[in-house]
Length: 344
Image 1: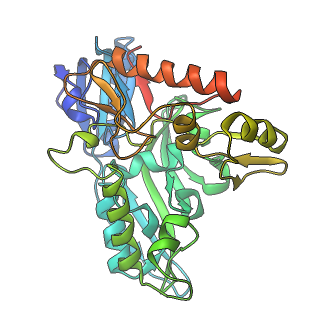
Image 2: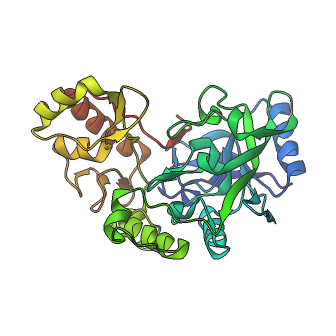
């Protein structure tokens, strides 16, 4: 295990923003992960686990603790009649894994193609897009319990999955470090075609294969600046910056009156509906391409805040606060950011 000092974090994030890590280590296996955790504790250092850096905003001053990058690789497959189980190291690139399952004709995560980051981050955020979320396919998660320093296998039911949330980023935040994720996928299964954007691509009654659906998802993501493409300014972001808010159905009439149009809605829990954050932001007067200093809204997707070149974390947060304040004032709806903050 090699401990490095004052390692720049901005190049390790999709935002391209932030100062250095005082200490940094890349762990290639479980033994090195445990060794790094113990090293930090012996020195009373704060610990942060870094994956692909795709859902992260680092403070301009950086982070004064140890950043641990989990680089555990490997994909093992156990074929079955009704399901194939893929055991995947937390450091594997997510989109590469999706491509592998599509080539194997195993359904369950094809609509999650093109999402940047690593496998280890997917259960934490319950990553989802285009009508799918990983909670539907995760069988179990192998973790290091940072309270006991013991390894543990957690079944999906123990993970507390809800919309963009899990036990790992809510009630037990900071306790578990993800090492491996097992996905249960359907061999020969049909592609998921529940989302409106995909239904516009594939006519009713059509039966596209998994590869066709995954390719369509990537095209849609690229059209919205949500696919990492070298040199594309709209890609210097953390993806969707705000979660789609869930509100009581009783608020719909008031929101409609304030907006002058009825919002699109999606089902949530009983008596609740999910609203598109992008719709609220646009109706609050923000257009694609809006700029505030060196931070801005993507020219292709209202939900993504972007680094226009040399933006600071402070500028991104100033833009966030401006949007949140205006949406709250106009619709009485609170927007919550998705990216994790480090060093603030």
